[in-house]
Each structure stands twice: as C-alpha cells, then as structure tokens.
Length: 240
Image (cartoon, rainbow, N blue to C red; front, side, top):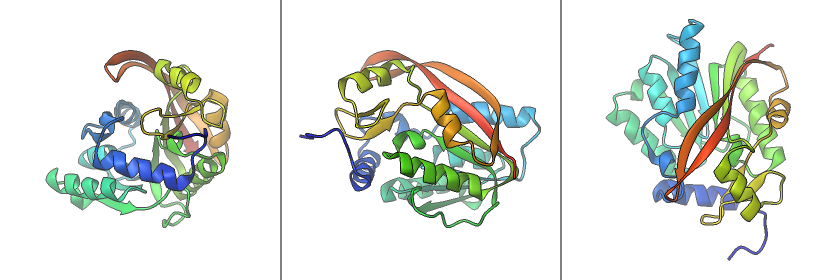
C-alpha cells in the first residue's frame, strides 16, 4: 500500500506500461478510435484549409490511435511513448490498418531530450500527456521540446483534463497527490494532473500564441458511474 502522496518517474512509467499490457483503469486508452479532441482538431484544420501532406507528431501517443487515424487522413505522423508495450501495439495496429507507410513509432520518454530536429513538424499533439507527467519540471521540459520541434507558424493541439471534471475533482479530494489539483489513482497509483486555464497558458507561453480555445463538455464513465467532464481544448501557433 502506498503511504505517501508522491510518485517518481520510474514508478509512473512502470504503472503505464502495465496499464498498456493489461488495460484496467483507462480502458478508453486501449481503443483504436481517435480521441474526440483529435476529431475537433481535424475539423479545425479543414476549416483553415490546413491539411494534406503535413508532418505531425504526438508525444505520449500510447497505442497510436490518434497517430494512425491522422495518417489515414493524409498526414505523415510520428508518435512516441515511454511504454514499450504501447509502441509495439501501435506498430502492429498501423500495419493492420495499412497505415505503416505514413506512421513512425519510437520508444522515447517525453521528459528526456527528443531525437528530432528543431522546426521539423507542422502540427504537434498533447492529448492528455502533460496530465500524466508527474512533475512540474518534467511537464515544462516536454512542452518546451514540443514547441521546439514544431515549424514556425505550425500548430499545437493541447487537450487536457480540467479542475471542473467531476470524476477528477472527486479523485483530487479523495486521493490527493503532493501537487495542487493532482491525484494518485486509488487503484493503479498513477499520477494525474488536472489543470486550471492559467496553468496551461503558462506551460505553453514560450514562442507560441493561443489561436483557438473551447471547453469540451462530455459524459465519461468511470467504474460504472457517469461523470460530467469539461476538458480544455486549445490550439497554439508557434510564432518564431
């Protein structure tokens, strides 16, 4: 039994690898359907006529559901995750869906220097990844790297949990972590961070500007019970 309200990076990675091997707490992460936030991003890109032969990257891509779906829409996509089991499954799924020629998956940790050149990608995706980085320092490093690899005038989608999400608000109250608005999942022990708007702006304030913003209202089911969610959905553009 955990007796503290903190977790280190090794423990977080180990929990995630186990979750990817044997989905239990976050079964939606095992889905091959893209996140609703990605579908909204795709609609936004089409409205702006920003689609076609573009290069994209997703950090913390898991089993590749978003990367593969965007590749099938014509993007050339790269995804990485620190979970070996997740990446192995992502590669398998991309072959199954005949998307392997437009996808590249690698095992890599977002809080370590990224193996990509500066200004390499047209779009970048943070789909609940910063939510699962267990330190302020780690989150800042990962977002700075994401900004670095995006081309000037390229776009970054940020889709993350908010302090208004009912289930996560309940978890913060019942199982708080040692950071404000964060919790340790009472079943898996995994760290999860909920955000206030200003925290996201502070994470992504370097060399980018906010160009679109919505609150995504939806119903999610956790352990058989329905909860209202109000996620943050933001698009930033790199300015230099």
